[in-house]
Length: 268
Image (cartoon, rainbow, N blue to C red; front, side):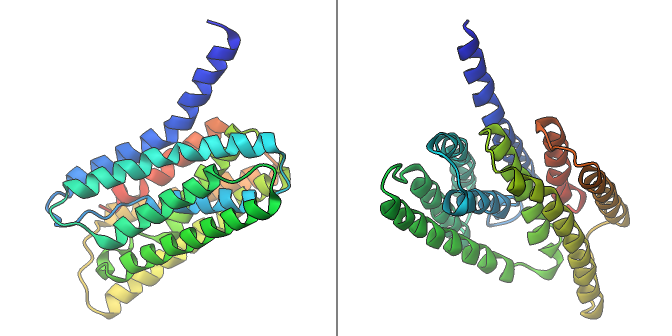
């Protein structure tokens, strides 16, 4: 096998790896809660946030056609996740319309990225603008999901933990596509740290709301201790990365990916 073929296989494997992790986690959570009538994905907003961050690169980033093509190919693998969600949603007893709308919006966002013209700047901006509209519709669909969730489930479906995961996924795709926007990539660990702190505050606020409204907290105290202990661990790790100007390579991003994927399991 030639070196080019080996590199191509390695690239495909690394592109599929986070998708396989996401779908495996979604499947495990799906079968652990089969008593629920409808299926609500745990990581859908994370993947949508990743797509929107990459979309921002396509719209505002000064990248060449080679970088644009590599990032487009990396983005297209996310379609596997949305197709997997569609299948799981079809297996549920009752179809959940907001999730279906979110899947459609995310797939349309991928299509606009895939079909963006290379040479016609005006047409490319118009195509990406349609993608932005689709992304906003996806965010609105997720907001509809959150509004209809019981307050006790707001921990597991925290938008901040999903944004954190989305930042990790976006960083993964940018590294994999050999993107040269070093300033933007260097900003991502800082955004991760900020999002992590926001998630901790968000969870405390939800706890207070449950307490004042006399709701029963279904999460065990051990789960909460582990949850916040991991927050401290991640905060220390990200501070170290920022202070030392370390680069988040795929190994470090794999660590962040697995840790952030564990959040819903700790609060299940």
